[in-house]
Image (cartoon, rainbow, N blue to C red; front, side, top):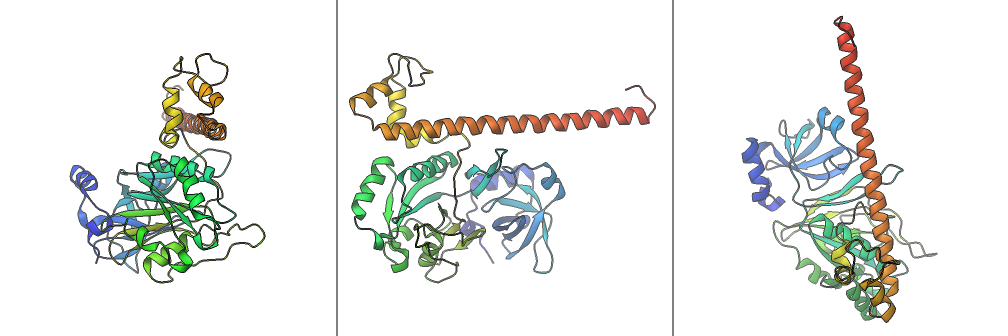
Length: 358
């Protein structure tokens, strides 16, 4: 048996149920996604589920349910029967990224989470620019961000790394841990309370699954070693999975990401608040910070008040986000045009069949 409040259910979702008239005993939360084969949790227990045909046909990648989503079933799940997901409730927060491929699509990584930890190893894979990228997507999701610098046991100067991250992630809590030695775990665990959902995101080999095991106090998630040649990790976690914390709260473990594409510019101004403040002082509201006169951003970079490498990374992310947003809009427009073309052809065939004029 699961109390819905312990699974993260609250007034935001309760209101949607009341508005639609759906029953509570048909409500479920997606706990795992095995490439479209879902595991769901309900008040009565857990079981398998799959999408209704309509949702499979109509849903784009960004609108298909993901782990953490609240859904309405046609009937209760059972071990010998697969329930059907008839409806996905509106999300309170959602962490997304650009899915791999030529066509830009939104991929749901974690839905309805309260706090997202960006996990980065203090090894050869440490990269503060990647942390900035993750923080942008976390702020865009609507969840609260935090950073975990893992593998402190193999870092020669931990405090220098912490100072570097804090300089680029102003106001974001930074935790230091060694998951293998169970050091720094209590500080992370103290951030997770009953009814909360917390997600861990980061690159392969950052130690997310090892962190989950340390937080749970048991080796539940499979883990692997990093390559000795370059210090990079290999994929071990193959699917997204919710797990219940012993003292309350839920953890969402995610597979490592080789890359995290920005879908839009949301979150950038929060991560780069210093640059955003300078932008507001530029003479022209559409200043590109290139050749325009009266550019406060260029002036700050020239005087040394603004780190030029930080500025270049901001520009790079801004260009990437705008390009991906444009690709996504073009894809949606072309998809809509195909749908309308198919409807038009169907109407023409129906008129011909009835003997009417096309």
